[in-house]
Length: 240
Image (cartoon, rainbow, N blue to C red; front, side, top):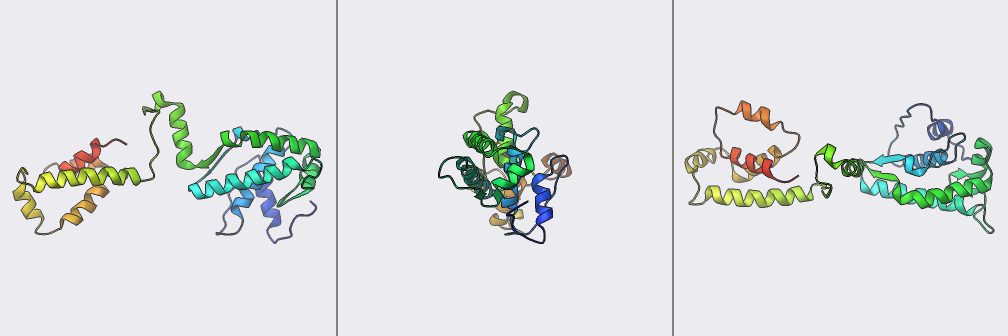
């Protein structure tokens, strides 16, 4: 295709952008153009013939909000350039890494059709599932709250709310356990001979993790008594 930058992996990049009949895995280091490749692939999906894909039919996910925002911003810029190409005084054939002439020759569509599809995609951009894995999972849960057994008004948590809940619950619990009203002072004295309250706090926080199989751990410790078991029960009662 004309006007494409010449790089040693150009053929591999074009294959990743324009292969639709099977899965494609791209392995590359930081700063090598993975986001550019993803944006180019999205543009090709919108323009391909036959069977162009509408933007609301696409799911494009990353792991961080920063990367998701960058991908959406760059896609918006690319679509805006393509949308202006057919207008008087538009940006012309070169739109950065996607060249209109490439799209026209590859798919046999006119510049006007390219611009029309770009305009339609811009209108759908905020409805498209371009974001993080956790935001997409939250979207699915809100679509099917009865089936998933969650409150549709739940809020996503990046860990900050968990830390707040834990800090509040821990402070209340440890104050009660070590106060005059505590009922396990003998156990606490024995425990604090070999560890510290700070270490117990770290352990309790770890036990509150979703990665811990609490039921299996409880069975293993069924014959022992430790003060932190009450703290773990409190963790289990926290809202998710």
